[in-house]
Image (tube, rainbow, N blue to C red):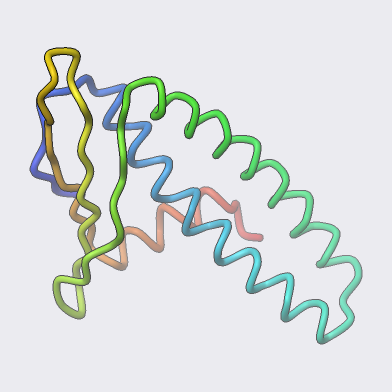
Length: 120
């Protein structure tokens, strides 16, 4: 993970990273649930829904944390076939804006997702 970092805490950067990964995991799980519904795999559906519920709870907490710090993560920018970027910005108390970019190698991002989902 490479990034052009705004001058903010490591905890704040970690929250931005986790929000990006969780959003991608939720999207992936929703797709898996649809496939499992079509294949009528009830056991898998229950497992996916349980994990989805955990991720939604975690995302809610992260959204609250980022909202308190006035942080917005913008839409993904596809750099090329290997890298993506997630620009973000936050409003400062002084009225200014700090900007940064989280840049990911797509394969590494998939690994982060796989670790987050624990082999779902």
